[in-house]
Amino acid sequence: MRYVRFIILSVICSIVLLGCAGKTEQAKAKYVFYFIGDGMGVNQVIGTEMYLAELEGRIGTKSLSFTSFPVRNYMTTYSATNAVTCSAAAGTALATGTKTQNGRIGMRQDSSVLYSIACKAKQAGKAVGVTTSVAINHATPAVFYAHQPDRQMYYEIGTDAAKAGFDFYGGAGWKQVFSPHDSSAIDLYSLLRDSGYMIIDHRQDFQALSAGAGKVVYVQPKDCVNPSSLPAAIDRKEGDLTLANITEKAIQFLSTRNETGFFLMVEGGVIDWLCHANDGAAAFREVVDFSETIQVALDFYKAHPNETLIIVTADHETGGLSLGNGPYELNLKLLANQKSSIIGLTQKLKQLKKSKGKNLTYPDLQELFKQECGFGATVMLSPAEEQLLESECMKIIRSDRNQLVRNEHALVDPLAVLAVKILNRKAMIQWASGGHSAGAVPVYAIGVGAEKFSGISDNTEIIGIIEEVMGN
Image (cartoon, rainbow, N blue to C red):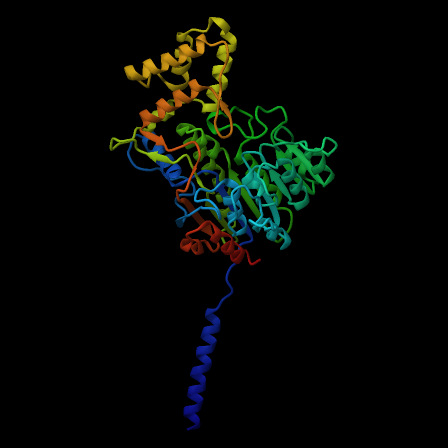
């Protein structure tokens, strides 16, 4: 009997020990990258992949750096009050896990404060960076450090950046550097310096200046064309600051801060701007640029595969992009004929009008569109398209004023709008609007805990998983 009891006890102990052995401690992510492609819906990603495949002479897709991640999913984006969200509400959900009303930055509907995953990471001892290709106090980066009732309160949002005390801010610059309500208030750059930040622009020696810096703000030079945005990838000139540059510098700086690791948010904000403008060619190339930026993080991941998590997603879809406009085909490779974004083409039209003055002729404009869009050379226009383009050109020639039209983020020339619209139509893509849509957005993940993202369905679910994987 004693022998039987001994055997039973031995079996029970073995089961308990095996159970304990199976409960090994889950790996934690020391380094977390959170990439947000603003406005980058499912069709923006697939369209870019199909565009790249067509450039290789085939129908299909060519993978981007992140589309081959082991976890691929999609999620909804609606806000607490609107089926179609704005970037502030969507960003707040992505940063805090809580839905709010459109326009809110890091606040609930009742204006109570919400703290982001970046704030929690900082509190847990990690180094923290917030970066973007647009203004650092624009909606999506702002939700990670700021708490304001209105996304248009750029100055107040900027002051919150100084209060948050994150280790690294990077982007195009700061929108509304001076207070619109108090002329005696300190400007944002001075406030940041007083708060211990070293301001470094792209022309300075980052390595030398940041070696002894406690905290860094990395931006474009002040004499850049647009302090609210980096140049679109399609418009970029040699020496321009890029999102990949910013990401490289952020990793370089954050990885030396402490032994606890870092959290880095990177926003591809210009994707949204180009989709608001319904500029297919420039938007696809901006997604490629975003992919190249993510590759920088992937290179870091390959060196730290058991300690790194990379998430790539979007806050919402912009423009209601449709891959097809009737016929059962696409001709995306035609978009490669476009040499400038709608914003860049507006600038070139302005320069041409200024240089020619009252001597501007239709052949002058024809030559510009031939160079910039391939019209009449590699892109053949139909008689109706030629007539429409000539009619609109003559209106501009006869007018004494240069009438521009406003889209969400820029003033653009109506001739640039028409040229881009013609190319879109010939490439067989179309847009539902110049605003956001309620379309699903993609989610991609690789690294520590990546498998947990395969089950999410809404933008509020990401943060809980990141917190679990980080061990906060």
